[in-house]
Length: 469
Image (cartoon, rainbow, N blue to C red; front, side, top):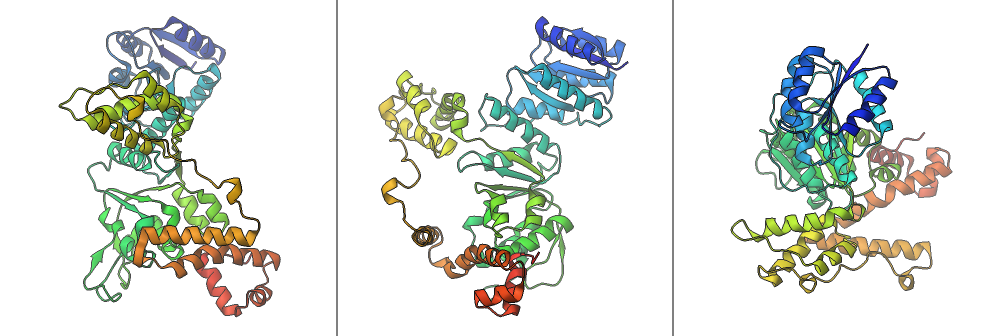
């Protein structure tokens, strides 16, 4: 009979899980402290262990190694009512196969026990000690899930796709994954794709050889080679040009890159983490992002929630930023009740980044004293188009969108912007797909409608990764 050890100082928890275990056919043992659990593990050798973190005497995380000496590769499930990123990572690094945040339902525990049975022989990694990490604050359920997925991602070498609105902490999550991973001693190379000149993106990522183009006066290693032995973080990956997407896919799969203008491949071993605030799958459907690259990058997605989905974290985050921004040599300023209420009531369209800026603004005005409601900056305006500004035709909509897009790109890139080429890459793929669908994939008919030669159309389809079927 499969045996189960339940370790918790709350009798109700032990009773509930014991009844569930007995119903599922387990032989159940209970312990109310880590010391008792170690003794039971030595005597009974349980097949599965369910272990609470907060226990009288030795805590659950510290007890894992001692329990592991007696249960070998038996799955250990950690549960806690005080989940944070450090606890989640410590649990995974100590070899826990699951991390549950109280309160949870017995149906959830039943699913976890079923998965534990399937992974009884999986080897854990109890050797690395947890590393202190600042920056992530959150006690809500959605953030506990984020902590758990970050911990699981750090324990593997899978490609991670971080999704979420601007300001939700995607780069912070990427740095956490790197810091807790086996690559933590290697480089962490971060690049924002949107900030790169599209014409030079390939050179930046893959490097170039001398003479590859006009300004290439010497050989240069690309970011993928610079990240060798560590982690490469590609922020705003949705903006990577189509031509560079092909080379990136090959680099991820083959672990080698060919510099621009060169014929000799260079080996590089890096872990890839990508981030985007755009709906990447919609870009795949519009022909702006290769579907094969999408599936390669999205091996392990992590969704970072907007601040409005975790309002209980707003005040703790504000207090954290007060301590972070006021300096270690000063007493942390307090936040008045009226200011706390104002913080909870705001929409925070800029998410955690906007909240940090608001606290920094308030600290300047409060001059080390209590932060009052009047010290907070004015709320950010709502995003969107008002009813009076709504356009009346598809042509007007397109014209307005192109105008806004052009203005934004010039503001970001200045004279280095390549607007005409970028606009073609934005507009042509969905237009080509629409015409091909209308013509049932008949290239000759589609070419006549588009006013293109068939050879030219086929080259464009190949460039954008669009297939006739």
